Image (cartoon, rainbow, N blue to C red; front, side, top):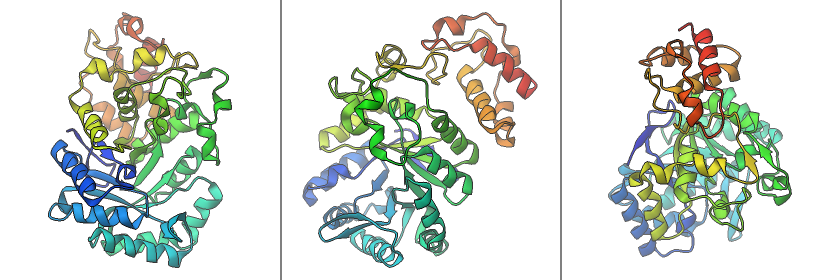
Length: 382
């Protein structure tokens, strides 16, 4: 298992994490069996959006004796009322629900306190000023949560939260279909078939800006909906018009700027093991470039996907990294200090490009690599 640092939190998380969907409706013995497989495979990050008390209790029991081996992303504002899940911004309910979560998990603290499901700017303002954020900060200051996160499906809202400096972790829906959709406060528009009737071209600018801003500011991204609720894996349901594989979806999410871990929505023990098996999968099974280039309803022509097909460069330039740093400066309209320093330590720089064009011939997306290298050399001065 590969581990990544989650932004500036200092936490080391497995690049394959687990959502809690698979624990719903399971017995303690089944939950323990899944946690055993996660520990054996090196998975150490678990998202806990569901407030189902049975899930929390079973997981708490399953973690006994090994709690320190796992990073828990526990949600605030996700509560259990009248036998079902509800999202709330009522501070007393948020406080009571979170304390109940700690009790059921049999733990005194969690590594990430995730403010649950903020998809509108008005709701973000409520969270920011209405007591929820202050409560999260109080929990952090007391050491009850290690850092503050927020989950969202809307890049406009997520950008506002990231730029505020109030969150250190963002849980966001990342996959190659959702990334083509513009910001919308209605999450169901992400999978609305009407939005995929016409061919879609290139990533929505706000989404690209979000990922690059997270990387620049050190806000770690944990990914939800990497498989589009399973639709992307189905020939008939995929909004892309063609099925993708589990490994292609995971690899796409893990190659976005800022991403540290993908929360796999594994619902069975076998699916847990399939997600973990990504770590040993050969590069050709992870590779999404050829599949994406052939999707009938989507085009990424001219857009760098950081897929690495441009390599090897005859003079040793890491073209994908240089392009990523160039895009970070474009998104910011300047050269941030951290980007400048990361570029500086590359063993080879864009100014060394000999314009041979070998990279462009290999690129599945027709990216003007030589021109990007010229611009990078100008921007960074080498």
